Length: 138
Image 1 (cartoon, rainbow, N blue to C red):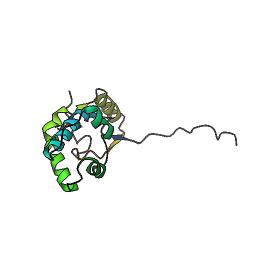
Image 2: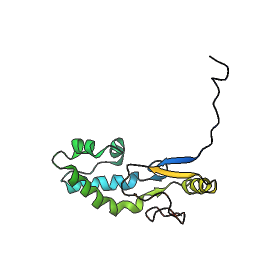
Image 3: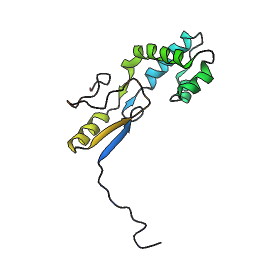
Image 4: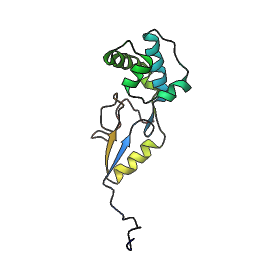
């Protein structure tokens, strides 16, 4: 090992990327309710939240194989879109999300969002610095 190879170089942070769910928001309650609505819609029994949490975040193709074998991906997506709207109000913004975003904005860091959470296609903040209306700031 050469001298200095074991040290970490400091680099300037230019941007911060966030995952949406589990980092900025908690949507598990809303998705659990919507998932049960979809199950019932397709003639199945609802499941306890603890069981739902074991498959939460699966790709829709895996949900199809596990729960909705007789239905197309498009049918399943349509049902999720329909029922999630009813529970969107239960999506919670984590308490530290706003202060962290504000601090990063003050430091003039670029921010981005990486997520498969398709209901929030807007950037984290618009030109006025506000989160999308679906994520009200307390």
